[in-house]
Image (tube, rainbow, N blue to C red; front, side, top):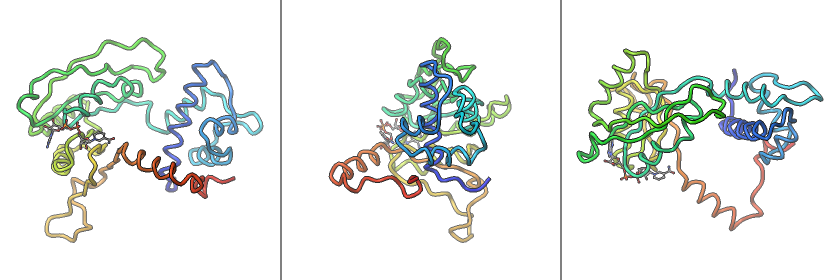
Length: 254
Ligand SMILES: NC(=O)c1ccc[n+]([C@@H]2O[C@H](COP(=O)([O-])OP(=O)(O)OC[C@H]3O[C@@H](n4cnc5c(N)ncnc54)[C@H](O)[C@@H]3O)[C@@H](O)[C@H]2O)c1
């Protein structure tokens, strides 16, 4: 598959959300025009984004909502479960742990880590993982997880692998000055996906003695996604002051 623009993948998430709303409203079919209207992009853009992954509709007939929803769920990898640990159980870590939305997409918290003595051993309610992606069933009651010390992460990850429950992702919710070392702990524990909430860039470690761009083995294939709501606020401020500069990306024009 050729490289796919990040913006296209973000839009797929938006289309999936729209399809879920359509399904809740018991709408059976939709079209690229209708999806485009709700997603505020062009119909051409919707067709182009979907075409990266295959053919989902019938020309002139549009899309069956349930089929397109199922296909986008599959394309986005949301039809399988993802085991997640949260590193940093301060204000943000606790809020993320409690938020039930992630479990609707099979993101299940399996471990919570921190360094603060007063937090270690504390139990935190996390949402139970849903068996089905449909999100229509009754939410199961929450589970409790114990906050562990970050130095126990590698052993914990190994135990998880031993029972076929390998950790897929780590959510990094530590202060920026600790983000790099916490990311290193995740990577040394064999975790390949990092969702970094700290306002700092995580740098892959280079091979010892090698050139800077030569990534060390444990960092190979590690994916880092940065999440920062302040980026959205700054962009909003810019466009509020410069509304005439708000335009679609060139690739979004029909
Ligand atoms: N992306 C966003 O939109 C967004 C929003 C809010 C906060 N943040 C960022 O998220 C991070 C956390 O914010 P907060 O308000 O929860 O901070 P906080 O101080 O309440 O919590 C941080 C926690 O990380 C722990 N910690 C420090 N070093 C650690 C390590 N090496 N391993 C494990 N745990 C460690 C601390 O003991 C503390 O409990 C900050 O970097 C903040 O800037 C991002």
